Length: 139
Length: 108
Image (cartoon, rainbow over all chains, first blue to last red; front, top):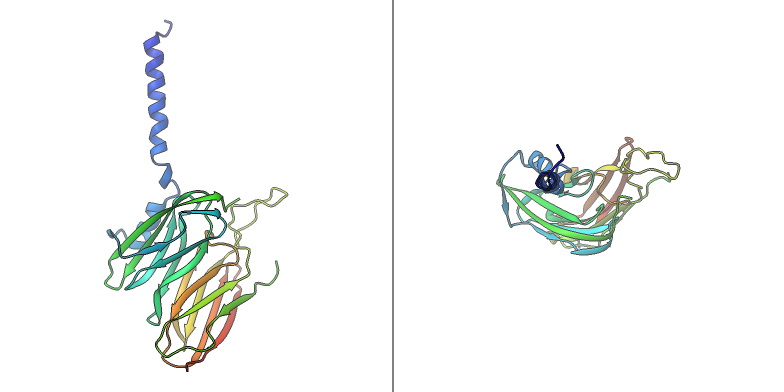
């Protein structure tokens, strides 16, 4: 039996739907959610209490300056969702050091950067920022 | 690869208990293990994976680094010290090498 016009349209529609499902999960395909859970032990993360100071757009993805501040934090971890690996760096602060740091990082393309802070009372705080890079840093 | 060279910049003198800025950098290619050389060969991962600063034998700040940290890792932080003392900086390479630097902090 020759395919009817309706069959062809349905096939097209389901193929489109199938293509859309994986597209919805692409952002987290480098495992950033699992990496953050490994850092927090799966604990809830509250928004706020962490400041991520980074450019919204930057020319050179090979060296993007990032400053992170979380008053009262004993550790701060940085993650990304667009590089091959989600981890960036984990800072552990002793009592003499202010819980803030500046570092330069590589971003393979425009993506989100996350800062997750472990506070002195054991709770976790999170913020994120989208950073657009003109030239990717993982060539 | 040229021997990595660490550099640290501190204020000439600081006040007891008042935070000052510490700027650190080490020359290092931070090979991610994802890139290929001009012959198409995968360049094996080789990064500085840990950076530790100690003061008076106690860890002041420790940083675990991943390949997403830029070549020639630059890390800046703020700290305060109660009295003059020695700051010790250590960078740990994937190949097991440890690069060290010591700086004296002079409190007015």
